[in-house]
Length: 111
Image (cartoon, rainbow, N blue to C red; front, top):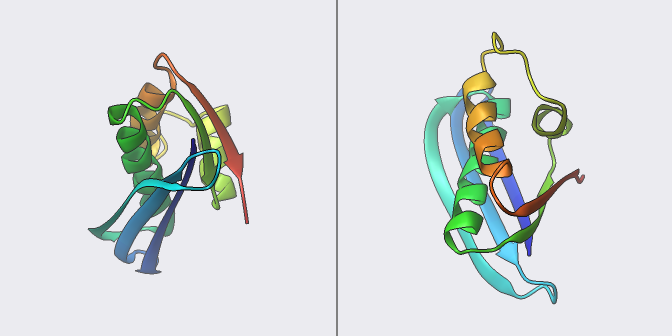
């Protein structure tokens, strides 16, 4: 399964939304989401998009997932970690909780 997520804010910080789509190996739609999440930074919105996307993929029992994210910073946080004192560390930890479960998730950056 391929999971593409995105987050955006109007201003930084500003009103923010997140969304994502899940597709199978043939590109067929298997699910998606779009949410208004209030006021936050662009990076926080990107992370919320990843979190909601991983949650949906896990709940639907997809166990091999390719996660594509357009934020290089978020990909670094997810693959290399983040300092516990960083303001976004709480959400990165929530995402890592999903990533450490019994499934295969490959995180990649896309433009």
